[in-house]
Image 1 (cartoon, one colour):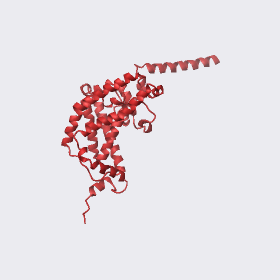
Image 2 (cartoon, rainbow, N blue to C red):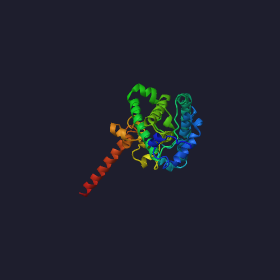
Image 3 (cartoon, helix red, strand yellow):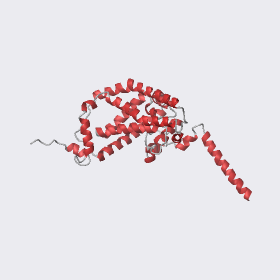
Image 4 (cartoon, rainbow, N blue to C red):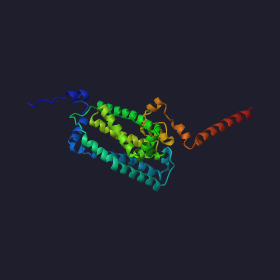
Length: 307
């Protein structure tokens, strides 16, 4: 009779092996069968680049449709409508900047890291409860680490010039600009993401979903649209595109990438309405005050005539 393998450690960590994990287990078994492909040193960088382009593509279609369907413009946060040719030129130029940085920096660094690491492929997939909990923990930890790093880059002048300034060349963001940054900043973000997954100690499946969500949230934050189905409208704890666009307009505040709580707690929260008033040197806010003043004067004049 074949002896049963000892799974006590995995059982304790990931819960019932036969209950709610059947779908995840089937997916994990299929991935484990492709272990040689998954451990390729060039896979992570190539996968990250193509996933970023894939997740940005719906917003490119959205911008192209906006050239023919003006109603889409009501969802734009800051940028006015522009010709399709100019829109495509911005995207193409940004694409090549990101591609060159991935080719010259991210791909070699990722290949070096993959060649020295020892990936673990446990037999069991996590339960759904553990799977979701690990992903949320990774997002929260990454959000905290990024807040500290982002705040430091804005507070230390040489760090801003050497690392972060390239990202702020896009004062008006669009989806592709989520990774339009200096090679040093792209590498630092990879380190923060890997560190978050390592500290949480999550299952490879959980780590994969975390990286996917991390990429999608960055794209959505930079998309330049305040869409009705955006995540920050469904879950108010997220900042979303208006929250991050405010940061790009005034170069301060709203340092957290996804959630709002760190900026609230640290006094760096920038309200979107406040930012909009300063967008053009305070003209918008002055117009609002002028309209409010004129409205009050009209009310007083009517009251005076009645009297």
